[in-house]
Image (tube, rainbow, N blue to C red; front, side, top):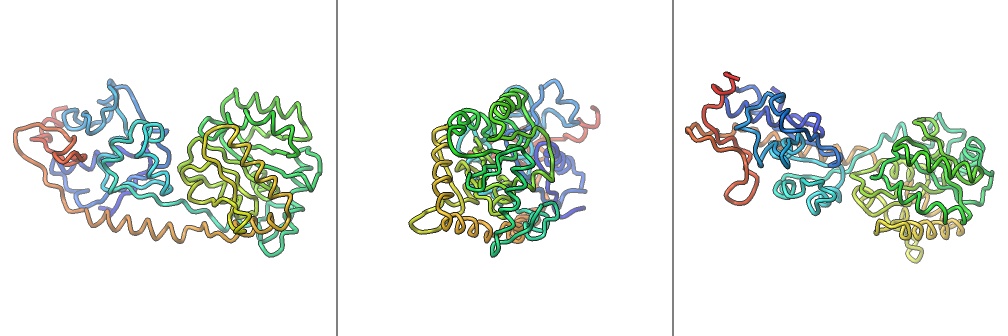
Length: 394
């Protein structure tokens, strides 16, 4: 048997419930296996009608309750994992706090997550620093590093030429690579675009998503072909070009569990303009011109006005080449490798393994279900009778 199972998201979350069913019925294979559930995005929970519960193979008297799979009259796979896993992880410290604080960011599971708060750990994602390295990226038209940035200017010219934009070295170029969905702040971008097109800026966008967003963005690009380029596709090579050729990188997310592109962009000397949420808040520091410190530009309110103000601050820094060089180099010096994160995951696995002693299952005739314990916390211990016989009859 494994020491630890690390489940990821709702697709595998039921494994935690199956493990607890084994404990309740006396099957021994996973008795000493700790379970960690990774939460990457609470917006996706695996909710289904109650009529499909039988397909899980779980006995209803054991699992279909407020303290397990039941969720507003249906069933919720992710909730089952949250309740039954030994430890929970998510992909940034700020997101770990946010999903416990409000129904909006917890997507209805905030109370359950708050009950599991002591067992929930936020660990920032890392990036592959070998694949994402401007000094050796074979996909780029030119390579560069924090000491010699000349190659970045070459990448900007090449990107402008490839996208049909005016080849203007002194115009700030903003890149964005994203799924075109509400979570990513595309509605903010669309609301801001009329004013942005009156500013001396250029924009390159790469991504696919909702048809309405695609149509509206394509219309802007058609109306301003030398100012904004929209590529409605997934193109890995172009993504590398945008990271390298952009002066700034836009991430106006409604929520962002971790985000990777802001880390890619800093590594490539493209300064992030982001909303202060989730992993964006954990990785980007506001540029302070007085202290000459910081790695990007942030805004708080989910409003087009706040987004535009952050872009204006970015443009003001772009007009000061020495400041811009300092911001670029500060971002490029950040360490977003997996080294630190891997050590934190190892510590979580050790905690989970330490909890692998068998849980005590009651053998009384009473058929109590998992739910809220006497101290108000989630009680995940099976407290049922001879479930094995009932389950065998099904």
